Length: 169
Image (tube, rainbow, N blue to C red; front, side, top):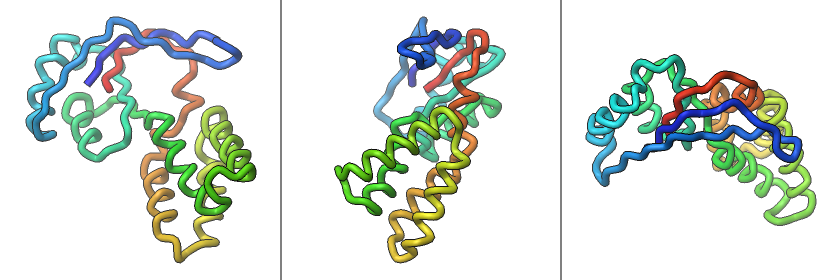
């Protein structure tokens, strides 16, 4: 787990970049329930329970959502962009072939839309592609993964200017 203070976005190369500072870390090689409980030491030390807003950037794993619920039920949850991209790419690779120019162009378009416009049009495109291939269950699994986390894919609103936040990852 990493906890840091999230600063207001700054523009770099025409993209908003969100920086964190005052990072601290906590780790243990134990089961998730024990980790959840032991992490209270660090979350309390950092004042996570009293801060105005908590943002949890995660890979979307169910155990991590339980962890966030335990520490701050009201935390804003963000699926880290590489995990979202991985699931979008899985569908594109199945449709156009891994490494093809068509797949690369399609993926670039989908990821740009996801990052700058949000998940609505991307999920619609993925649904269309998956519906055309009902025999490929792995595609449905990738789509379901993203659909379950649609609220965590609101990247444009996550990048909107705000004051300092406390982040737990």
